Image 1 (spheres, rainbow, N blue to C red):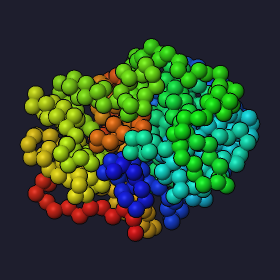
Image 2: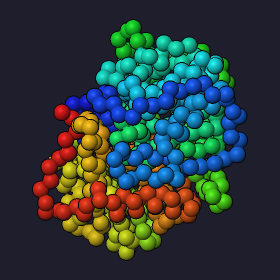
Image 3: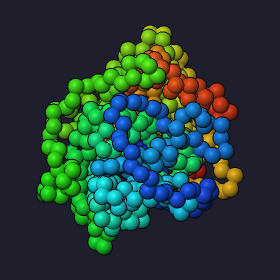
Image 4: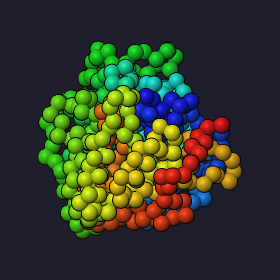
Length: 450
Protein backbone atom coordinates (compact mmCIF):
# COMPACT_ATOMS: atom_id res chain seq x y z
CA UNK A 1 0.00 0.00 0.00
CA UNK A 2 1.00 3.50 -0.47
CA UNK A 3 0.75 5.13 2.85
CA UNK A 4 4.25 6.26 3.85
CA UNK A 5 3.43 5.35 7.46
CA UNK A 6 6.21 5.88 9.96
CA UNK A 7 6.71 2.24 10.66
CA UNK A 8 6.55 1.34 7.00
CA UNK A 9 8.75 2.93 4.39
CA UNK A 10 8.20 6.52 4.98
CA UNK A 11 9.59 8.48 2.15
CA UNK A 12 7.99 7.84 -1.13
CA UNK A 13 4.40 8.28 -0.16
CA UNK A 14 2.43 5.55 -1.83
CA UNK A 15 1.85 2.06 -3.02
CA UNK A 16 4.69 -0.06 -1.80
CA UNK A 17 5.60 3.33 -0.73
CA UNK A 18 8.85 4.36 0.63
CA UNK A 19 8.41 7.98 0.28
CA UNK A 20 8.43 11.04 2.41
CA UNK A 21 9.74 11.17 5.93
CA UNK A 22 7.55 11.81 8.85
CA UNK A 23 8.03 12.66 12.52
CA UNK A 24 10.82 14.94 13.63
CA UNK A 25 14.44 13.78 13.67
CA UNK A 26 16.29 13.41 16.96
CA UNK A 27 19.32 15.32 15.74
CA UNK A 28 19.52 19.06 15.23
CA UNK A 29 22.50 20.48 13.47
CA UNK A 30 22.61 23.88 11.82
CA UNK A 31 21.28 26.70 13.90
CA UNK A 32 19.05 28.89 11.76
CA UNK A 33 18.43 32.59 11.68
CA UNK A 34 15.09 33.63 13.09
CA UNK A 35 12.74 34.83 10.38
CA UNK A 36 11.92 38.52 10.48
CA UNK A 37 9.06 40.31 8.85
CA UNK A 38 10.89 41.97 5.95
CA UNK A 39 9.03 44.73 4.16
CA UNK A 40 6.84 43.20 1.51
CA UNK A 41 8.05 43.77 -2.03
CA UNK A 42 5.76 43.65 -5.05
CA UNK A 43 5.38 40.18 -6.53
CA UNK A 44 7.27 39.73 -9.77
CA UNK A 45 4.93 40.35 -12.65
CA UNK A 46 7.38 39.20 -15.32
CA UNK A 47 7.39 35.43 -15.74
CA UNK A 48 10.53 33.64 -14.58
CA UNK A 49 11.76 30.14 -13.89
CA UNK A 50 14.49 28.67 -11.68
CA UNK A 51 15.66 25.29 -10.45
CA UNK A 52 15.71 24.78 -6.69
CA UNK A 53 17.67 22.14 -4.79
CA UNK A 54 18.53 20.65 -1.41
CA UNK A 55 21.81 18.80 -1.01
CA UNK A 56 22.60 16.60 2.01
CA UNK A 57 25.17 18.05 4.37
CA UNK A 58 28.65 16.54 4.15
CA UNK A 59 28.24 15.64 0.47
CA UNK A 60 29.51 17.17 -2.77
CA UNK A 61 26.04 17.24 -4.36
CA UNK A 62 25.43 20.94 -3.76
CA UNK A 63 25.49 23.31 -6.74
CA UNK A 64 26.31 26.85 -5.52
CA UNK A 65 24.64 28.42 -8.55
CA UNK A 66 21.31 26.70 -7.76
CA UNK A 67 19.13 28.34 -5.06
CA UNK A 68 18.60 26.30 -1.90
CA UNK A 69 15.09 25.11 -1.12
CA UNK A 70 14.86 26.74 2.30
CA UNK A 71 15.96 30.14 0.98
CA UNK A 72 13.42 30.01 -1.85
CA UNK A 73 10.62 29.02 0.53
CA UNK A 74 11.66 31.75 2.95
CA UNK A 75 11.69 34.37 0.20
CA UNK A 76 8.25 33.34 -0.99
CA UNK A 77 6.70 33.53 2.48
CA UNK A 78 8.54 36.68 3.53
CA UNK A 79 7.31 38.65 0.55
CA UNK A 80 3.75 37.31 0.36
CA UNK A 81 1.34 40.23 0.23
CA UNK A 82 -2.13 38.77 -0.25
CA UNK A 83 -2.33 34.99 -0.12
CA UNK A 84 -0.39 31.79 0.54
CA UNK A 85 -1.65 28.32 -0.39
CA UNK A 86 0.48 25.34 0.61
CA UNK A 87 -0.39 21.73 -0.26
CA UNK A 88 2.05 19.18 1.08
CA UNK A 89 2.20 15.68 2.52
CA UNK A 90 3.04 16.56 6.13
CA UNK A 91 5.06 19.01 8.24
CA UNK A 92 7.84 18.24 10.70
CA UNK A 93 10.48 20.45 12.28
CA UNK A 94 12.85 20.76 15.22
CA UNK A 95 13.97 24.00 16.88
CA UNK A 96 17.05 25.24 15.09
CA UNK A 97 16.56 23.46 11.78
CA UNK A 98 16.23 25.30 8.50
CA UNK A 99 12.47 24.89 8.26
CA UNK A 100 11.83 26.93 11.40
CA UNK A 101 12.44 30.33 9.75
CA UNK A 102 10.01 29.36 6.97
CA UNK A 103 7.32 28.55 9.53
CA UNK A 104 8.02 31.82 11.31
CA UNK A 105 7.71 33.64 7.98
CA UNK A 106 4.28 32.08 7.47
CA UNK A 107 3.27 33.26 10.94
CA UNK A 108 4.60 36.74 10.14
CA UNK A 109 2.68 36.79 6.86
CA UNK A 110 -0.55 35.97 8.68
CA UNK A 111 0.16 38.73 11.20
CA UNK A 112 0.29 41.25 8.36
CA UNK A 113 -3.11 39.99 7.15
CA UNK A 114 -1.98 37.68 4.38
CA UNK A 115 -4.60 34.96 3.94
CA UNK A 116 -2.90 31.59 4.51
CA UNK A 117 -4.32 28.14 3.64
CA UNK A 118 -2.39 24.99 4.49
CA UNK A 119 -3.50 21.57 3.25
CA UNK A 120 -1.97 18.38 4.68
CA UNK A 121 -2.65 14.67 4.30
CA UNK A 122 -5.01 13.38 6.99
CA UNK A 123 -3.41 9.95 7.32
CA UNK A 124 -0.08 11.43 8.39
CA UNK A 125 -1.44 14.11 10.68
CA UNK A 126 -1.53 12.06 13.89
CA UNK A 127 2.19 11.35 13.63
CA UNK A 128 3.04 14.92 12.66
CA UNK A 129 0.67 17.14 14.62
CA UNK A 130 2.91 19.81 16.07
CA UNK A 131 3.33 22.15 13.10
CA UNK A 132 -0.26 21.94 11.77
CA UNK A 133 -1.64 22.44 15.29
CA UNK A 134 0.67 25.39 15.86
CA UNK A 135 -0.33 27.11 12.64
CA UNK A 136 -4.05 26.37 12.97
CA UNK A 137 -4.19 28.55 16.08
CA UNK A 138 -3.00 31.67 14.25
CA UNK A 139 -5.46 34.29 12.96
CA UNK A 140 -5.64 34.46 9.15
CA UNK A 141 -4.40 30.86 8.89
CA UNK A 142 -6.67 28.00 7.88
CA UNK A 143 -5.43 24.41 8.07
CA UNK A 144 -7.28 21.49 6.53
CA UNK A 145 -6.66 17.76 6.32
CA UNK A 146 -7.61 15.76 3.25
CA UNK A 147 -8.35 12.04 3.44
CA UNK A 148 -7.46 10.74 0.00
CA UNK A 149 -6.82 7.31 1.48
CA UNK A 150 -10.53 6.66 2.02
CA UNK A 151 -11.27 7.37 -1.64
CA UNK A 152 -8.36 5.99 -3.63
CA UNK A 153 -6.09 4.29 -1.07
CA UNK A 154 -3.58 7.03 -1.77
CA UNK A 155 -2.35 10.17 -0.03
CA UNK A 156 -1.72 13.84 -0.67
CA UNK A 157 1.89 13.38 -1.77
CA UNK A 158 2.26 16.62 -3.78
CA UNK A 159 4.51 19.43 -2.60
CA UNK A 160 3.58 22.83 -4.00
CA UNK A 161 3.07 26.43 -2.87
CA UNK A 162 1.15 29.28 -4.51
CA UNK A 163 1.81 32.85 -3.34
CA UNK A 164 -0.10 35.95 -4.45
CA UNK A 165 -1.62 34.16 -7.48
CA UNK A 166 1.74 34.40 -9.25
CA UNK A 167 4.64 32.78 -7.40
CA UNK A 168 4.74 28.96 -7.34
CA UNK A 169 7.03 26.23 -6.03
CA UNK A 170 6.70 22.63 -7.27
CA UNK A 171 9.11 19.87 -6.30
CA UNK A 172 10.05 16.81 -4.29
CA UNK A 173 10.80 18.35 -0.88
CA UNK A 174 8.45 17.71 2.00
CA UNK A 175 7.83 20.40 4.61
CA UNK A 176 10.43 18.81 6.86
CA UNK A 177 13.73 20.04 8.22
CA UNK A 178 15.39 16.86 7.02
CA UNK A 179 14.41 17.67 3.43
CA UNK A 180 16.50 20.81 3.71
CA UNK A 181 19.65 19.38 5.33
CA UNK A 182 19.81 15.62 4.85
CA UNK A 183 18.00 14.71 1.64
CA UNK A 184 18.65 15.49 -2.01
CA UNK A 185 15.64 17.32 -3.45
CA UNK A 186 14.88 19.06 -6.73
CA UNK A 187 12.16 21.62 -7.35
CA UNK A 188 11.21 24.52 -9.59
CA UNK A 189 10.08 28.03 -8.74
CA UNK A 190 7.86 29.68 -11.34
CA UNK A 191 6.62 33.24 -11.48
CA UNK A 192 3.67 33.06 -13.84
CA UNK A 193 -0.01 33.77 -13.32
CA UNK A 194 -1.30 30.99 -15.58
CA UNK A 195 0.83 28.34 -13.86
CA UNK A 196 -0.31 29.64 -10.47
CA UNK A 197 -3.94 29.78 -11.60
CA UNK A 198 -3.83 26.18 -12.85
CA UNK A 199 -2.37 24.81 -9.63
CA UNK A 200 -4.73 26.97 -7.60
CA UNK A 201 -7.62 25.09 -9.21
CA UNK A 202 -6.09 21.80 -8.12
CA UNK A 203 -5.66 23.19 -4.64
CA UNK A 204 -9.30 24.33 -4.51
CA UNK A 205 -10.49 20.96 -5.77
CA UNK A 206 -8.78 19.26 -2.83
CA UNK A 207 -9.56 22.02 -0.33
CA UNK A 208 -13.27 21.54 -1.03
CA UNK A 209 -13.12 17.94 0.21
CA UNK A 210 -10.83 18.51 3.18
CA UNK A 211 -11.85 18.99 6.82
CA UNK A 212 -10.89 22.07 8.86
CA UNK A 213 -8.35 21.18 11.52
CA UNK A 214 -9.37 21.68 15.11
CA UNK A 215 -6.30 20.84 17.23
CA UNK A 216 -8.55 20.31 20.26
CA UNK A 217 -10.69 17.66 18.57
CA UNK A 218 -10.04 14.25 17.02
CA UNK A 219 -9.56 14.23 13.26
CA UNK A 220 -12.88 14.14 11.44
CA UNK A 221 -13.51 11.90 8.47
CA UNK A 222 -12.57 13.98 5.45
CA UNK A 223 -14.18 13.86 2.06
CA UNK A 224 -17.73 14.43 3.24
CA UNK A 225 -18.23 17.03 0.54
CA UNK A 226 -20.32 19.22 2.85
CA UNK A 227 -17.90 22.11 3.17
CA UNK A 228 -19.17 25.43 1.85
CA UNK A 229 -16.10 26.41 -0.13
CA UNK A 230 -16.96 30.06 -0.54
CA UNK A 231 -17.93 30.86 3.04
CA UNK A 232 -15.05 28.81 4.46
CA UNK A 233 -12.42 30.74 2.51
CA UNK A 234 -10.99 34.19 3.14
CA UNK A 235 -12.45 36.70 0.72
CA UNK A 236 -9.25 36.85 -1.35
CA UNK A 237 -9.73 33.16 -2.15
CA UNK A 238 -13.51 33.15 -2.43
CA UNK A 239 -13.28 35.64 -5.29
CA UNK A 240 -11.95 32.82 -7.51
CA UNK A 241 -14.58 30.34 -8.76
CA UNK A 242 -13.80 26.67 -8.19
CA UNK A 243 -14.11 25.68 -11.84
CA UNK A 244 -12.27 28.34 -13.80
CA UNK A 245 -11.49 27.37 -17.38
CA UNK A 246 -7.97 26.10 -17.78
CA UNK A 247 -5.57 28.78 -19.06
CA UNK A 248 -3.85 28.40 -22.42
CA UNK A 249 -1.03 25.95 -21.76
CA UNK A 250 1.87 25.53 -22.03
CA UNK A 251 3.03 29.02 -21.10
CA UNK A 252 6.17 30.51 -22.60
CA UNK A 253 8.71 31.81 -20.07
CA UNK A 254 12.13 33.25 -20.83
CA UNK A 255 14.92 31.22 -19.22
CA UNK A 256 18.38 32.70 -19.68
CA UNK A 257 17.10 34.42 -22.78
CA UNK A 258 15.52 31.32 -24.29
CA UNK A 259 11.76 30.91 -24.75
CA UNK A 260 10.88 27.91 -22.57
CA UNK A 261 7.51 26.18 -22.49
CA UNK A 262 6.07 25.12 -19.13
CA UNK A 263 2.98 23.04 -18.39
CA UNK A 264 1.76 21.72 -15.01
CA UNK A 265 1.01 18.01 -14.65
CA UNK A 266 -1.41 16.41 -12.19
CA UNK A 267 -2.05 12.94 -10.77
CA UNK A 268 -4.27 11.01 -10.41
CA UNK A 269 -6.73 11.48 -13.24
CA UNK A 270 -9.70 10.45 -11.10
CA UNK A 271 -9.06 13.43 -8.79
CA UNK A 272 -8.88 16.09 -11.47
CA UNK A 273 -10.74 19.41 -11.75
CA UNK A 274 -13.28 19.32 -14.54
CA UNK A 275 -11.70 20.05 -17.90
CA UNK A 276 -8.15 19.40 -16.69
CA UNK A 277 -7.70 15.80 -17.86
CA UNK A 278 -5.19 16.85 -20.50
CA UNK A 279 -2.76 17.54 -17.65
CA UNK A 280 -2.75 13.89 -16.57
CA UNK A 281 0.87 13.24 -15.62
CA UNK A 282 1.43 9.64 -16.67
CA UNK A 283 0.48 9.99 -20.38
CA UNK A 284 2.65 13.11 -20.58
CA UNK A 285 5.63 11.25 -19.15
CA UNK A 286 5.13 8.39 -21.60
CA UNK A 287 4.87 10.82 -24.51
CA UNK A 288 8.11 12.49 -23.47
CA UNK A 289 9.89 9.13 -23.25
CA UNK A 290 8.49 8.12 -26.65
CA UNK A 291 9.84 11.35 -28.14
CA UNK A 292 13.42 10.61 -27.04
CA UNK A 293 15.84 10.25 -29.94
CA UNK A 294 19.26 10.14 -28.30
CA UNK A 295 19.37 10.40 -24.50
CA UNK A 296 17.08 9.86 -21.56
CA UNK A 297 18.28 10.58 -18.01
CA UNK A 298 16.01 9.83 -15.05
CA UNK A 299 16.46 10.23 -11.31
CA UNK A 300 13.84 8.94 -8.88
CA UNK A 301 13.64 7.70 -5.32
CA UNK A 302 12.08 4.38 -6.34
CA UNK A 303 11.15 2.47 -9.48
CA UNK A 304 8.93 -0.61 -9.47
CA UNK A 305 6.53 -2.51 -11.71
CA UNK A 306 4.93 -4.32 -8.77
CA UNK A 307 1.44 -3.45 -7.62
CA UNK A 308 -0.92 -4.50 -4.84
CA UNK A 309 -2.56 -6.88 -7.30
CA UNK A 310 -0.25 -9.85 -7.83
CA UNK A 311 -1.96 -10.56 -11.16
CA UNK A 312 -1.11 -7.12 -12.51
CA UNK A 313 2.19 -5.38 -13.25
CA UNK A 314 2.66 -1.66 -13.81
CA UNK A 315 4.34 -1.70 -17.21
CA UNK A 316 3.36 1.68 -18.65
CA UNK A 317 6.69 3.38 -17.96
CA UNK A 318 8.69 0.17 -18.10
CA UNK A 319 7.50 -0.58 -21.62
CA UNK A 320 8.17 2.99 -22.76
CA UNK A 321 11.74 2.79 -21.44
CA UNK A 322 12.32 -0.53 -23.18
CA UNK A 323 11.04 0.89 -26.46
CA UNK A 324 13.40 3.84 -26.12
CA UNK A 325 16.29 1.46 -25.43
CA UNK A 326 15.34 -0.70 -28.43
CA UNK A 327 15.44 2.25 -30.83
CA UNK A 328 18.94 3.19 -29.69
CA UNK A 329 18.29 5.84 -27.06
CA UNK A 330 20.91 5.90 -24.30
CA UNK A 331 18.87 5.50 -21.12
CA UNK A 332 20.41 6.18 -17.71
CA UNK A 333 18.53 5.74 -14.44
CA UNK A 334 19.78 7.01 -11.10
CA UNK A 335 17.74 5.52 -8.25
CA UNK A 336 18.21 5.73 -4.51
CA UNK A 337 19.32 2.84 -2.35
CA UNK A 338 15.78 2.72 -1.00
CA UNK A 339 15.05 0.81 -4.19
CA UNK A 340 17.00 -2.17 -2.85
CA UNK A 341 14.10 -3.53 -0.80
CA UNK A 342 12.98 -7.02 -1.77
CA UNK A 343 9.72 -5.80 -3.27
CA UNK A 344 11.45 -3.31 -5.60
CA UNK A 345 14.87 -4.67 -6.45
CA UNK A 346 13.44 -7.33 -8.76
CA UNK A 347 11.98 -4.61 -10.97
CA UNK A 348 15.47 -3.22 -11.48
CA UNK A 349 16.87 -6.69 -12.13
CA UNK A 350 14.24 -7.45 -14.77
CA UNK A 351 14.88 -4.15 -16.51
CA UNK A 352 18.67 -4.45 -16.40
CA UNK A 353 18.77 -8.08 -17.55
CA UNK A 354 16.62 -7.54 -20.61
CA UNK A 355 17.86 -4.17 -21.87
CA UNK A 356 20.94 -2.01 -22.28
CA UNK A 357 19.54 0.56 -19.83
CA UNK A 358 22.21 1.78 -17.42
CA UNK A 359 21.14 1.80 -13.77
CA UNK A 360 23.15 3.33 -10.92
CA UNK A 361 22.30 3.23 -7.22
CA UNK A 362 22.82 6.50 -5.35
CA UNK A 363 23.71 6.10 -1.66
CA UNK A 364 24.08 9.10 0.65
CA UNK A 365 26.60 8.43 3.44
CA UNK A 366 25.46 8.54 7.09
CA UNK A 367 25.70 11.86 8.93
CA UNK A 368 28.81 12.21 11.07
CA UNK A 369 26.85 13.35 14.13
CA UNK A 370 24.60 10.32 14.30
CA UNK A 371 21.82 8.38 12.65
CA UNK A 372 18.85 10.36 11.30
CA UNK A 373 15.73 8.33 10.52
CA UNK A 374 14.12 8.57 7.11
CA UNK A 375 16.89 10.77 5.77
CA UNK A 376 20.31 10.65 4.09
CA UNK A 377 18.73 9.69 0.80
CA UNK A 378 18.15 11.07 -2.67
CA UNK A 379 14.45 11.93 -2.88
CA UNK A 380 14.61 13.92 -6.16
CA UNK A 381 12.30 13.05 -9.06
CA UNK A 382 13.13 14.44 -12.50
CA UNK A 383 13.89 13.48 -16.09
CA UNK A 384 15.79 15.06 -19.01
CA UNK A 385 14.93 14.03 -22.61
CA UNK A 386 17.48 14.67 -25.38
CA UNK A 387 18.83 17.63 -23.41
CA UNK A 388 15.80 19.67 -24.48
CA UNK A 389 12.76 18.64 -22.43
CA UNK A 390 12.50 18.04 -18.69
CA UNK A 391 10.09 16.81 -16.06
CA UNK A 392 10.30 17.73 -12.38
CA UNK A 393 7.74 16.47 -9.88
CA UNK A 394 6.80 14.57 -6.74
CA UNK A 395 5.87 11.18 -8.25
CA UNK A 396 8.06 8.17 -7.73
CA UNK A 397 7.88 5.72 -10.61
CA UNK A 398 5.42 3.25 -9.18
CA UNK A 399 1.81 2.80 -10.23
CA UNK A 400 0.08 4.25 -7.19
CA UNK A 401 1.76 7.61 -7.51
CA UNK A 402 -0.01 8.13 -10.83
CA UNK A 403 -3.33 6.35 -10.21
CA UNK A 404 -4.22 6.87 -6.55
CA UNK A 405 -2.18 9.68 -5.07
CA UNK A 406 -2.22 13.42 -5.49
CA UNK A 407 1.01 14.51 -7.13
CA UNK A 408 1.98 17.60 -9.08
CA UNK A 409 4.81 18.18 -11.53
CA UNK A 410 5.99 20.38 -14.38
CA UNK A 411 6.98 19.53 -17.95
CA UNK A 412 9.50 22.07 -19.22
CA UNK A 413 10.61 22.34 -22.84
CA UNK A 414 13.83 24.31 -23.22
CA UNK A 415 17.48 23.53 -23.92
CA UNK A 416 19.02 25.88 -21.36
CA UNK A 417 16.76 24.77 -18.51
CA UNK A 418 17.34 21.12 -19.41
CA UNK A 419 21.10 21.69 -19.58
CA UNK A 420 21.12 22.97 -16.01
CA UNK A 421 19.10 20.01 -14.82
CA UNK A 422 21.41 17.72 -16.78
CA UNK A 423 24.36 19.20 -14.90
CA UNK A 424 22.73 18.14 -11.64
CA UNK A 425 22.15 14.65 -13.00
CA UNK A 426 25.76 14.34 -14.18
CA UNK A 427 26.96 15.51 -10.78
CA UNK A 428 25.13 12.63 -9.14
CA UNK A 429 25.93 10.07 -11.84
CA UNK A 430 29.69 10.73 -11.66
CA UNK A 431 29.82 11.20 -7.89
CA UNK A 432 31.37 8.81 -5.41
CA UNK A 433 27.85 8.05 -4.15
CA UNK A 434 26.66 6.41 -7.40
CA UNK A 435 27.55 2.79 -8.17
CA UNK A 436 26.42 0.62 -11.10
CA UNK A 437 23.60 -1.73 -10.20
CA UNK A 438 24.76 -5.35 -10.16
CA UNK A 439 21.90 -7.67 -11.10
CA UNK A 440 23.66 -10.62 -9.48
CA UNK A 441 24.62 -8.94 -6.22
CA UNK A 442 22.89 -9.45 -2.89
CA UNK A 443 22.01 -6.04 -1.49
CA UNK A 444 21.09 -5.22 2.09
CA UNK A 445 18.12 -2.83 2.25
CA UNK A 446 19.02 0.57 3.65
CA UNK A 447 18.24 1.15 7.33
CA UNK A 448 15.63 3.87 7.58
CA UNK A 449 14.71 3.91 11.24
CA UNK A 450 16.19 2.73 14.50
